[in-house]
Image 1 (tube, each protein chain N blue to C red):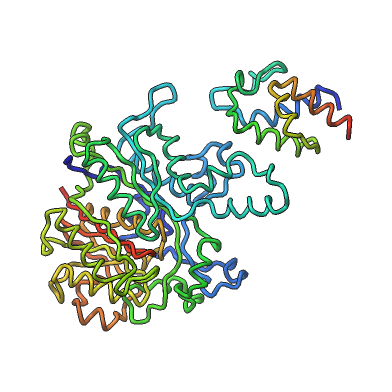
Image 2 (tube, each protein chain N blue to C red):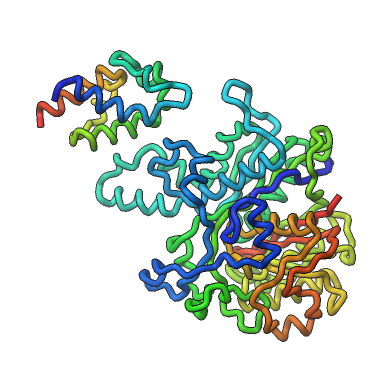
Length: 84
Length: 422
């Protein structure tokens, strides 16, 4: 799966958790999930669960920390998929 | 002591969602009780119950799509809708996101247990070693204070925001707690009420105790029979009632509609002694609670025009009527009018007190007494204490000035409030 394909699926997941005052168009590959997109930190857990379901992977606790921006999340997902 | 009034009402009841629909149902005597095949499937003895009907569109009026993701707590659903209705019915708005929160508005919203279905879902996942997959809202939906937390956040309430729990007296107690808080000058507005989940996981324990009726699975609307000689147990229900309590000062300043003034009330306990137990009331305590409520309200017993009873449709209804009669020293035709909302919507458990207070206030405000359903055969032990005419079986239009509401519950808890129309 290309990183563009991952990005587009990830965007669909993330947009559900955006607060009302942040629009989907504000998501880009460098966006910081909490600081820039204002996603409630407790919802990061839900983003991760949705990612696991969508890509059929399991993300470990220590890998969560590396998923703070859209691009770093794509990297983690890419690595997981390649090692399946 | 500040004077305290009620300026907003909200309701999610099995026979009506929203004040308007509910008031019509009260006037017509519409039942909200129905048959649930899922209860039969689960081998329940009592396969009837009463739950509010909430459309998907209605949910979206009160919750964001994000909030509704993995949402599975009917009590919080009902409580939020009723609570937000009471706020807007009082002419108040939530704090906007940019402004300070509302320092002088608090929430006391009770429940028996929260998010039972959500908890069940979580337990299944957990036992399947999937604790990490519970998601972020399991705690918020299953903590007892979930309902006050949801409401507090939606409104921006920044005074005391809490949840009380006293079984079937929860809603009535919440009103009294809010009243005391306002009377003491600690806030200007308090959103008070209670809610209860519906469904087998809440109702099952009562089915096991055989306190619900198993005789009306064929005719659900006839099942809830308070004060009837053929009462055979209560019909389990659910929903939420909400009231916006406010200091008289603040209500006048805003020019708000005043439904009634809370003159006073009392909460006590029978100590599970002298006939009282986990499940039965100590009659002396019930009578003391009513008398003390009158004393605190500064009202004499003969001023009470109407009683909104607890009256669940068990053998204890006769004891309740006797206790009212003894506490008020009134009987026969001199007894106040009395009715039980439970004949229409069953026993809403933790939600019952607040739904019934809302019903009582609507009746006083509009000058009518809702009919008691299903008691064409009044219990002889009730008729020997009070006259039949005091138990209207048809809607009765009459001015009500001062009324009493009491709720009693497991743990031998009692709560009684006195209201007056201004």
